[in-house]
Image (cartoon, rainbow, N blue to C red; front, side, top):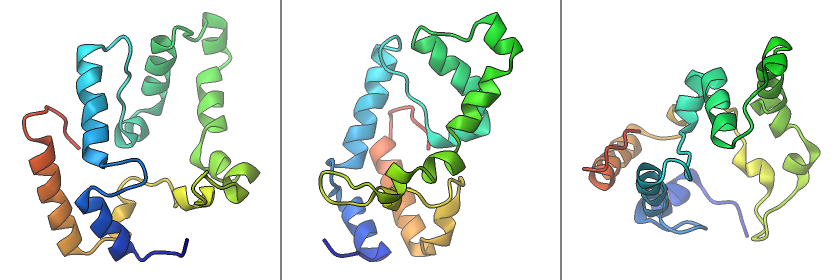
Length: 146
């Protein structure tokens, strides 16, 4: 499997062709299910998580039924968990630098720099306009805002 250009990958993404099927269908399926069954599906975007990581970590552990204890709160375990799960730590683990998926994609291909909005460094203005139009069409009436 050879490396593909950003243009090739973008085109396939826009066409709904990806390793795990059309992104929009996949994402909207989880979004709709999270609205119907909020006790079973916790829907969170990367952008929201990055805005308020402490809040969303607390919500996630509550959702999973294992909230932080008062002692863990006192010992600042929220901050410790966030650090342990940080982009810098996870992206530098050996398994993520050297491992591959079952389809042969190197795990390190899934890590760039962990910054919200970094897409601006890779997509042209035309690509952004096309993606915005697709988002608008695919998400229309769903209540989901990206």
